[in-house]
Length: 391
Image 1 (tube, rainbow, N blue to C red):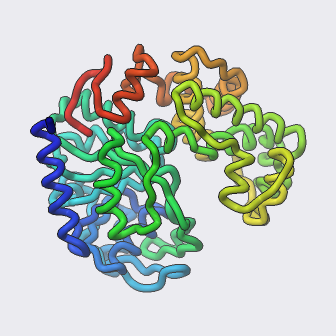
Image 2: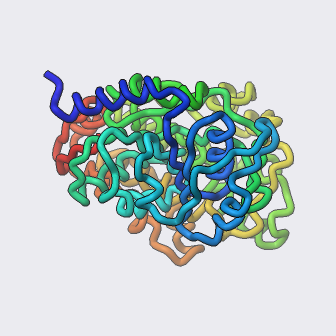
C-alpha cells in the first residue's frame, strides 16, 4: 500500500507533467555548465532562476537580464532572477538543477535543507560517485521530513565553456545521459518530467549504476599525477590523453578500471569497462585500453591542465575514488591501485582526501550489507541507515 509520502509525491509528479513548458527551474551554479544550462532552458521557454554562492559572478547576468548562448544552441535566455540567496533560489522551484563541482554538494544540501518543499525534484548534474546518496544523507542529518525526489545524472549533458560572465558557448549536447532517482522506483515518473526539457535523458538502473559508471574517476586523477612532472615543466603544453597516456600509463588506468568494475560487481551492478565505454561512446576500437584511447579522435587536441592544482585531483579523488575505495573496503573488495592514487594526490596537495571524501559514513551506508544497500537504493528501505523521508 502506498505511503502518505508516496501519495504526495505522485500528486506532485502528475501536477508537473501537466505544467509542460511552465515547469519552473532553478539552476544552482553560475560556472561554465550552469550558464549553459540556465541559458538553454530559458531559450527553450522555461521560467529559470540562476543561483551562485558568490554574488559578484551574477552582476553581468543581472545587467544584461539573462544569458547569451552560442554554438549548438543560439539565442538569449532571459532569467527570472539571478541571486546569491539560496532561499529565493529554491522558493517555488519545481526542478532544482545543481550544476556545481561535486565538492559543493554537501554544503549545498545543508544550505537547502530548511527551505525545500514537498515534491521538488533535485538533480545533481552529475552526481559523480555517490552524489545522491551523500545528498540524501545530509538531508537525513538535518532531519528533513519533506518528501522529495533526489536525482543524479551519470554525466553532464553539455560540453560547454563560459566565454564571459553572461555568455556561454555550447560545443555539444550529449545524445544520451542516464539518470537515476533515490529510490529507483521513481525513475520513470521523474524522467517523464525532465524529458520535457531534456529528451536526451534516459533511465539508468539506479544510483549505484550511475555512480559506478563514472569513467572520469578512472582516467583523470592517475593520468594527472603520473604526468605531474611534464605538467609542471610545460604548464600543460601537450595533448592530455594522446601524449599523456603511454602504454605503461594505460596499464595503470586499466588496473584502476578493473578495481572499479570489481566494486560494481560486488554490489550487483554490471558495469562496462573503460575500453568498452570508449567503443560505446566514441566508436573507438582497440584490443586494449591504450589502443582504444589512441583511436578516440575526440581526444585529439585536448590539452593537459596547466598545473596540478586541478579538479582532476581535488574533485575526482575525494568525490570519485574515495567512495570506490571506501565501499570496496567495507565489502572486502581490494582496491590497492585506487588507494595508491588517493595517497599520492593527498601528498601532492597536502590534504587527507581519504578523510575528507565521500566515505561510506558520509554516504549513509556504513555497516550495511549488500542486500540492505540494494534494498535502499531500489526500493527505499532504510536498512541500517537513519530513516528519513527524502527520497
